[in-house]
Length: 415
Image 1 (cartoon, rainbow, N blue to C red):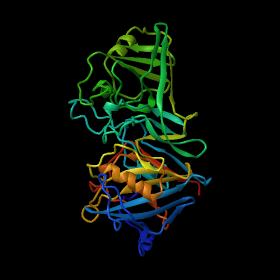
Image 2 (tube, rainbow, N blue to C red):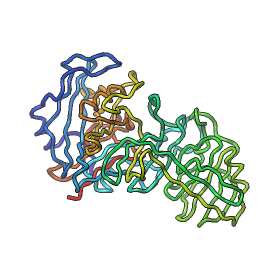
Image 3 (cartoon, helix red, strand yellow):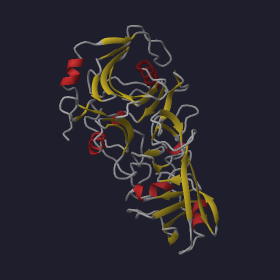
Image 4 (cartoon, helix red, strand yellow):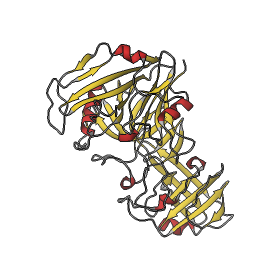
């Protein structure tokens, strides 16, 4: 697919007339903005059955925000939403590539991810996402400890376990997915504290499957539950379990692909001491699951943090940092999903948003619940052109080109 930025013929036609959607003020650091700083939107363009695209402008005292919106009707039987990700959890790719490979009709970038390890010289960057991930009903990973995350400061009450989820009932919701698991052997039963995560809790044991990929697992034992930049643990142990029996014990965290039917258990501190009691040939049972606040595993889930609940901004949102933003919103009791990203083109579209302003924006666009996704250079919005059916990058990423990301939210149509 050729990477193309900006408007196409369909959106240019829609731009002939801008209609004022909402007047009134937008909260800017808690201050009311004058009524003439409202939101203007283009006429919506049909992308696929149940999926429309439009653009909007929001005027703030410091300038104009330009954004892109995909509205998804989850009640349409031809429409579905799922997680887009590369061949492995610990891998990155541009949103346009992820969407094109899976024939999505639209997508935005997803969760924050391990993007830099400058504080850990010699440790490989994993590119793995922060929060839980579920794709097509398959559990890919759990959440890293709160102190190990990348991204803006979490508002009070939020955790890395927060997700946007879509259930098998085709309804979207904000949820929280906690990892529950055990490692059982003749030596005892121990809690499993990680699943394909770039960071493990201090003293914990994590499981790594073929879904992790070939990237080194060394990063998983670096930092602490409260300090991402803390050093790497010296007391670690790795155990390979193949078809339910211990195949290898000992050694540092490794790298390389994990074969189907095998699991690498990695422990730090107390977790390492427990793993070293295992013996080659010993039977080991590893069980795990992501448990939500509602029954049943969702068909799809991606990490982020809530910014709107019950049609109100969440308390404690950041009002200082201004950057490009990506968000997902929910309306009509989970029947409608909004995917939104702002434009990062230098010059007339330079102005970004604070997290608090993002919450106000999502409210004005119609969301009763909303989540903040990765922003800045990661913000990317793609959708299919209704004229020639090509997938195009609609916004201008702030770095001038797409940043490879850990995952994305993909919209699909059977048409």
